[in-house]
Image (cartoon, rainbow, N blue to C red):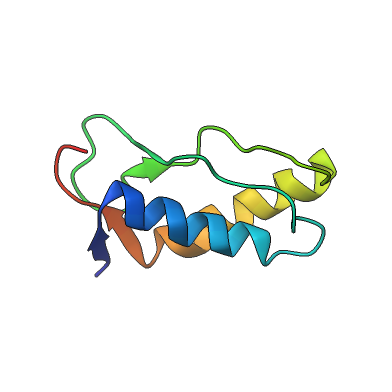
Length: 80
């Protein structure tokens, strides 16, 4: 069972989680996006990341890790 979050809440959680990953201190998640036609489970994605001074390889690895970990905990509420 996952916990529902608003787009703003989930974006902040994803941004904090990404910045806590090694080498990603300057990266940021500007927004998460809902996936169409998915009503249960991981119904959102991280479509874009601002790199800052982080290396793209560090950010790629971190986004996959963060999305997988947070997708097990949170879902995007409603038609957001």
